[in-house]
Image (cartoon, rainbow, N blue to C red; front, top):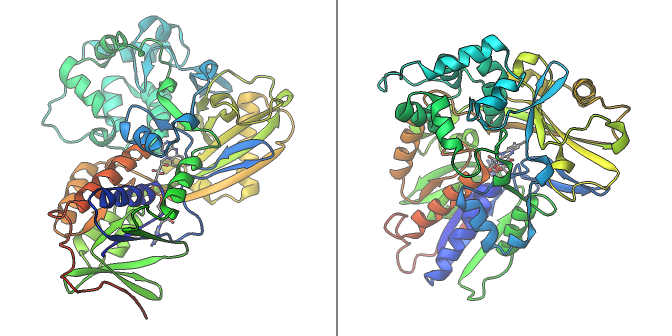
Length: 492
Ligand SMILES: Cc1cc2nc3c(=O)[nH]c(=O)nc-3n(C[C@H](O)[C@H](O)[C@H](O)COP(=O)(O)OP(=O)(O)OC[C@H]3O[C@@H](n4cnc5c(N)ncnc54)[C@H](O)[C@@H]3O)c2cc1C
C-alpha cells in the first residue's frame, strides 16, 4: 500500500488529499493517506461560524469564478446548489477619502479608467491628479529589458503618485495586504504589464477592454465574478472533510485524519521519506507540504537547505478580521455596496471593510447589519499587536467617521491571522522558479500553498490538483515500495 502524507489541513491540504484519493481510486491503486494538521480544526484560514442568525466569515469570503479550479471542486463535491452570488444591488465598491466613501468610477479596473466620463466626474482623484493620469496617453513604453518594477514604481511612472495613493494602493495592495513599494508587478499584475507592452497606454488598453462584455459596467472588483457558499466558505472545507472521512466504496484507499499533529521535519531515509512529528516518525512514499511557506521551509531544513532558505524568506504579513453586527437603524448612512477600502494615506487603522450582509444574501437577520473590518497587512503590522479593546476602539472610531454609526455593536468577533498573507515581493518569480526546481529534485515531494503561484483559493486548489496529478503518475512520484516491503508508522 502506497503511503501518502499531506501536511496542513487548510484548503490546500484537504483538496490535495481529496484529489489524490480520487486518482488512486480511478487507477485501482491501494493508498493510505495521512492528513496531518497542527491545529485543532480543519480549514486553515477558511473559517465560518453562525452566531445569533449571522453568518460570520473570519477568513476569506469569496471565490473567484473565472479561475476554474475553485468552481470545479465545488461542483465535484455536489455543492453547486449552495453557491451564492453577490447581491445585485451591492456590486460596487467604495474608496474612503477623508470622511466620505466615494464609489469607484464605473469602468475603472484596479488602477486605470476604462471610461473617461465617469472617471472625470469622480472626486476620487483631484484635477491635477487626473491630468497627471492623462499623461499615460502619451508616455512611451518602458524598456522591456529593464529591471523588475514594484506596483508603486509602475503606477507612479504611468499614472502618477495620486493614482497610486488613492486608487492602486487601496484596491490592489488591499488584495495582497501588501506594501506597494515591494509588491512585484510581474508576479501579481502581469495583465497591466501586458497592456503596456501591447498598447503602450493603460488608458487606451482599458478603453479597448471595456468594450468587452462586462467591463463597461464594472466598478472596482467585478463582483459578478465572485461566489460564496450558503453558510459561508467553510461549507467547502467541511464537505472535503466529510468526503475524506467516508470510507471508499472499493476499500482500496484509507484516509487517516489527525488534528494536533504538528510536523517538525521531513527527511529522506533509505530512499523513502520520513515525516517527523513531535513524538512520532511516519514513513511515506509521497509527501505534500500544504502549510504556509515559512512553516514548510522549517520542515525541509535538513532535506534541502537551499529549498528551505527560499521558502522561509518569502515574507508573510498578519491580518485581523473583526465581524461587527449592528441594528439597521444604527447606520443611517449605510451605502449600497459590497464594501470599501481605505487608502493608507488616510492614516486610519481600518484598511478595508466588507458590508457582509449587503454583499451576500442570508448573512444577518432582516433588522441587523453585519460588517467585517480588516486591520493590519504589510503596511500596518503594528496594528496587529493592539489588544482586542484597542483595536475595537480604533476600528469603531473609523466606522463612526465613515458610516456615521451610532452606539455600540450588538456583536463583535475578532480573529487574528498572524503570518497568513504571503507577500509577492520583488524577486518572487525567480524565487518561485528556484523553489519549483528544487522540489523537482526530490522525488515524491510536492509543495502547495499561498506562497507560490497565487494567494486566492482557486489558485491553491489548482496547485493541489497539479500536485495530486504529478505524484499520482508513477513516473513523477517516488517509485512504489518494493514487493513485500511494508511501510509502517514508527512510534518512538
Ligand atoms: C483574512 C483573509 C481573507 C482572505 N480572503 C480571501 C478571499 O476572499 N478569497 C480568496 O480566494 N482568498 C482569500 N484569502 C486567501 C486564502 O484564503 C488563503 O490563501 C488560503 O485559504 C490558504 O490556504 P492554504 O491551505 O494554503 O493555507 P492555510 O489555510 O494557512 O492552511 C495551512 C494549514 O497548515 C497548518 N500547518 C502549519 N504548520 C504546520 C505543521 N508544522 N504541521 C502540520 N500542519 C501545519 C496550519 O495550521 C493550517 O491549518 C484570504 C486570507 C485571509 C487570511
